Length: 385
Ligand SMILES: *Cc1c(COP(=O)(O)O)cnc(C)c1O
Image (cartoon, rainbow, N blue to C red):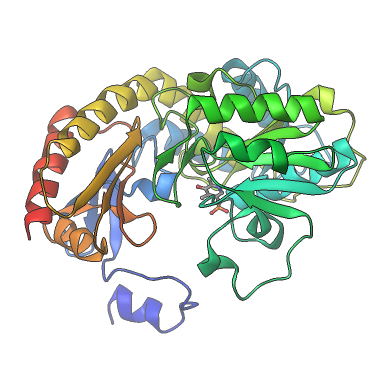
């Protein structure tokens, strides 16, 4: 039996899978079990910013696995200390505390809890089309009815306002609001960059009302949008920042960066067995070092412009709009995106959806100019099918 049949015999059935078994990767390229090569614009759904098979991450992992694989936060750890130093050098100085965890949804769960404790309030304001994860707390902030329908009632006091609608902020964010949580580019919700105006007005309103501002940079962090964090392009520092996906070069890891000004969080009010695990810390230190050494953020800015301009130059009648920031790009179609994704795959390019009508590109940030040219040319072909 092949890989697909063996997986199908036991898979949870929760994932909509493509009939492809991916077995190897290098940079922005992937290979299936039959040896076919693909150009990767899925990028581990945002977890492969550094590209596949990075030797520095592989070496750091192997060395740490031999040295020490487990060390919970009952103890101090040299690798964890090193990661804190590494993060302190790239985060805004005001975000001087970090809680380590293992995924994006876990980072959001913790952020919401911290906001409630710090403000002694319970209201959470989120945005329509926002995506923050699928565990029960994060799911309350996630908007998509397709994710929520079966699972309510949710944490009471959670509301959603229209994204990028400045006029909606004042009524929603009040003296009962613990936090406003927002993505700087909505990823799953269709590749929609937040406007400067919206983000700055939200920050002002939060400050005015004593509510905390949470940025969910799980997908936009670590170079994706052309800067190490998208917040640099908005000139706004949140009270709490959620990170995960590409943080540790493909290893499962998340983080909540926050300000000491939030006050002390009660001991034992939150924890995670795998948080700050030395293997993940070693991978993150190596991955962040490599993102910097390879100039991934600058490459994301340049290649992102190239991709956006190229996609905007495609005059297909089914295209409604092309959007993006750095190397998170999307084409919103007037029709379902499925056939275009399939046509791309048949031509050796793996891309993903973002809602039913958006074709999303999240390539590793090491992708080259000729590879981007190929993505553009192949998209032109796929849209003509
Ligand atoms: C992917 C994502 C999450 C959830 O991350 P998981 O690791 O899948 O739990 C949360 N927020 C945003 C913005 C994401 O893109």
